[in-house]
Length: 86
Image (cartoon, rainbow, N blue to C red; front, side, top):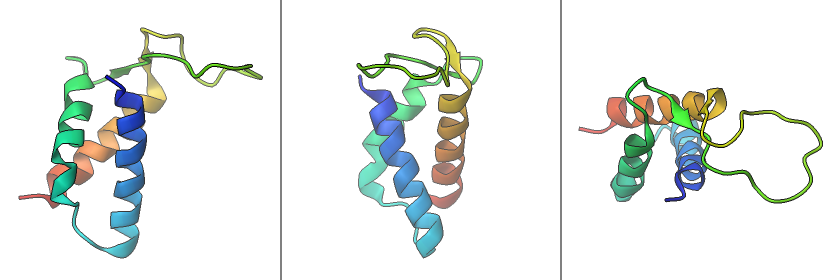
């Protein structure tokens, strides 16, 4: 599963929805369920993989560890979705 990619796209749609004042698009339901499924029992999201290429400086944790950034984005996306959809 490419949940970080799904999470990035969901975060984009969240931002646009808030900017435009429009409700979430119901066609995103499957993507949101992927984000929800990736959440760990303790409420965090794990770093799944790193993008290939040179790393100039580290901004997150190694693969397999809880990521504060993924957790921030995941929590925001799910809170937005759950509060704006019936």
